[in-house]
Length: 119
Length: 339
Image 1 (spheres, rainbow over the protein chains, first blue to last red):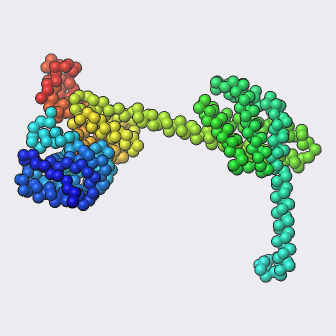
Image 2: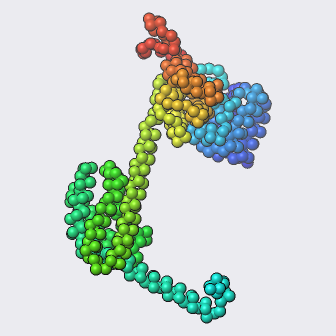
Image 3: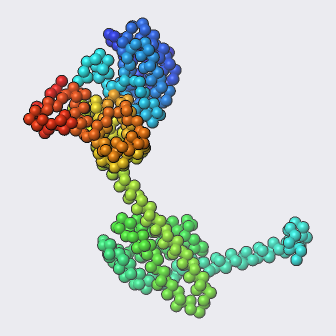
C-alpha cells in the first residue's frame, strides 16, 4: 500500500507530500506520524505540501488536526510551501488553520523550528 | 339561442360540421388576405424602384447627424444605404411574411448589428444610431402615399407593415448598441482591475500592496492572487497591505482583507495592514470587526519599520533628525543594518 515517507532529521521529522492526497492516505499519514513522533521523540514536524495543488475540506481539516495532535505530543508543526491556489481554497472553505504555523519553504520552516533567524 | 350556449358535444353531428366548416373558411380567408397584403415582394419592388430617390433624401439627413461625430463620409453612408437596401430586399423576397424575427432576416440583423456596433464605438448616441433606420420611414411613406393614392385600404395596411418592420429594426439597432456599449464597459472594468492592483517590493523579503478604490469580491480575488503569487516569486516573509486609498471599509471589505491576510499566513507570510485613517478605525470598531489577530499600523512608514525589524533589519535612526521611530528620516543606504 502507498505510504507517504517520513524522514528524520535530528530532532525534526520531515513529511513531503508528493502525491495526490486521498482520504485513506491522509488517515494513514496521521497514524504513521503520531507513532513516529513518539518513537523518535521528535520536537518538530515539517509538512511540505508544495507539490499539493488540490485540497478539499477533509485534507484541510486533516492538516489542522495533525498539527494539533503533534502539539499534544510536544512537537511543533510547521506547514511549508503552500501554493497560492491552495491557500485561497482553504480560506474560502473557512479553514484558516489558526493553530498551525506556516512558512514559505522547508528552509524557512526549519529555521522557525530550530529557532535560528530565517535570514 | 339556447343551443349556442350548450356545449358543442350536445349538438347534432350536422350542426357541428356546419360550425367547424364556417370557422375553417373564415380562417382561410383571413390567412389568404394576410399573405396577400403582407407580400414582401411588393415592398421589395418599391425599394428597388425608388432606391435612388430614397437615397437622395436619406443620405443628406444622415450626413447631418453623422458629420457631427466625424469620421463618416458621404460615400460611406451611401455605401451603407445601398447595402442596407440590398439585404432588406433580399429578406423581403425570401418569404411572403414580413417578420423581422424569422431566419430569412438573419442577414439584415447581421448588417444592422455591424452598423450599430460601429456607431457605438464612434460615440453616436442611441437615438442617432436608431435614426439610421427610422429616418427612412418618412421618405418611404411619402412615396407610398403617391403610389397608392387610389387604394387607401392597401395604403393603410402597407403603412402598418412598414411601420412595424422599421420599428423592429430600429429597436434592434438600439439593443445591439446597448450590448456593444456594455461590452466596452466590461472590458474597461477588467483593464482597471488589472491596473489597480500592483504588488511592489519594498525591501528584500518585504512586499507592499497599495490598495486604491473599493474592494469588492472580484477585486479581492485578483488582489489575493497577485499578492500570493508575488510572495511565492520573491520569497517574501512580510506583506504590507496599505488601505490609504480605500474610501470606505465596511464589514464586507474587512472580511475580504481578513481573507487575504489568512491566505498569506497559510503560505507562511505575515501581513500588516497600514494606512488606516481615523474615521476608518472608528468604523471598524463600531462594526465590531475583529482585527485582533492582524498587525495594524496607522501609516505605511510605521508598517515598514515593523517589517524591517521582523526580517532582522533595523533603521539606525540617523541621529541628527531626532525623529520618532514612526517617522523615519530620509533613507540613506548605510542606515540599514543587516542582521
